[in-house]
Picture 1 (cartoon, rainbow, N blue to C red):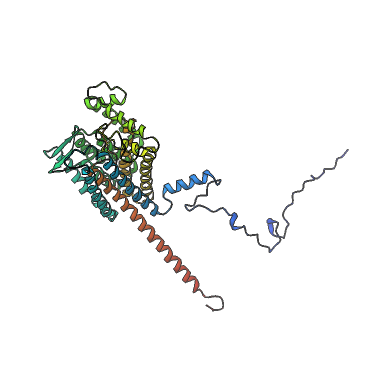
Picture 2: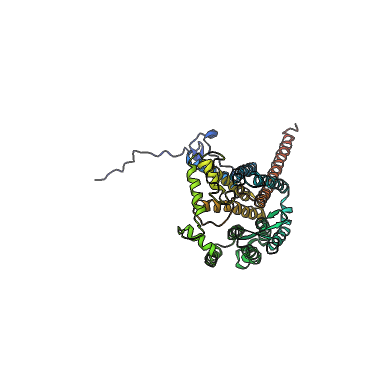
Length: 463
């Protein structure tokens, strides 16, 4: 029996020959235009938008903002706004925390506040002046700034040196005192950026990673600071050195080795110093010493705890009545938390975070390695020091004597921090000028193209 093959009932309609080729459309009929609203548009940077319209798109926009894909005007305003807000908060807290203990002084209750206000005006003036400088001029100032910083640090070892609480890290000329290590931080960021920019890709090798940033210059600065027994400032300088070398392209293996060596050196320095050993023991909970090393950190925690959510009110701190030694210096954040509460403390943390975001955007957008490295070094200095201070007063780190930038009392510290912000603002201003020039060039090009297109002759000789 022969069976006849059957055709499948499901027929696949093929293209009609001679009518639209392989598309199945009649010849001569154009394809329907796709609606504009349904087209998938790429983002500004050329990458496709993220899937979904909820958290994924929000995260994408936040990351684009962090990377600086929007206008550089936002970075400039963010840095300037956070700086001014932190400076004003610092002046208010210095007045609140120092006025009580200075009631019986001959200089008056407002002496420290007036001094800090003068240094704030000087620092803001330096910030405005430096922000007007160009990148080339800042690059040329790198070597003179480093030499001046080294000379100032060497003056600490002369009779001009002044010791405060066991640290000989100040110089006194008449009634004026200054801390040269603050100038060394800014000079190191400028100088290291200028040197590492010239090295370029050579920083990937061990020799060019060490010489001359880590040795001899970094070693000289650290040695001069450690002679004055200021371990906290030495840690901040090491943080700046690590940041600039990382941004210059140093291999991570070298950082691992350097970190192990630094940890070993820190242990040795802690063991050979009785004062540091007592502080570490107090941090670990052993308070059985005659000097009562747990007194200051414990009362700092009492202040933060009594502040609650909203605080006791500005000027209403109890712990500043001689319960916390040097309340206007290293432990001023605890007074802030007691008077302004958790909300005020988180506001300060948010302002430092905004400052970090603004500087990160400037470094991310900069085409020059000098700008990226210098901005990264200043970012590590200011934000890293703030993190160390807040961690110290909240019990996460031992007490090492690092002030809170913008907030703690200290004229030279405030002046040079504001000067460093001026350097970053100078970079942001240059980016704004570069963007304005690019927009002007694009507008000129489009106008020229439109004019050329409008004068093209039509067929037949008619214009």
